[in-house]
Image (cartoon, rainbow, N blue to C red; front, side):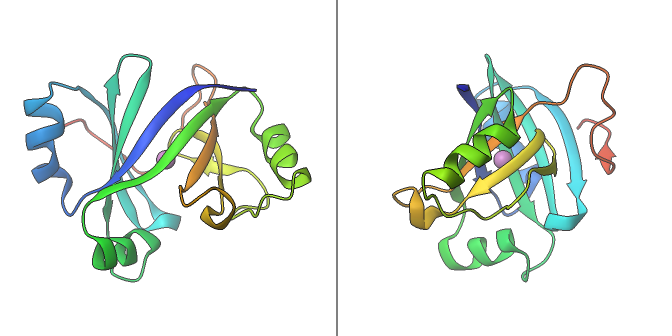
Amino acid sequence: MLSRIHHIGVVVRDLEQAYGFWRNTLGLPVHKVATVKDQDVRAALLTVGESEIELLQPLSDQSGIGKFLAKRGEGLHHLCFATDDVGAELEGARDKGTRLIDKQPRPGLAGMICFLHPASTRGVLVEYAEPYPPGHPGLPGEEPLP
Ligand code: CO
């Protein structure tokens, strides 16, 4: 079952510049920064109540996020729902005929994650995340907080 909005993904040109608005103006604390190698992005997670803002800075023009930035500029990228069983949620979407980007859940910054294809979601890139349990080391590539 989907329980809440886990985070909203926002593409930015440069994390440090983006902190000027998201952290300094809005006052949202950064609680994690990491390089996600297989996506070729640096990502920062900021806390807002029970949810998060995920800032995504591409590390190459060829990455998915790099292509998005070149084509559409900075801005809203995806919406992520929290679930306690990402595998079951993915199966459920598949059974209902939803096109998938990920055939299987994979480790991501927010937990075990998967993406649905925007062709099946009225144009919104949708992510599901099952947060890692407390004490889980998370992904490699974590940086000290700014
Ligand atoms: Co995300």
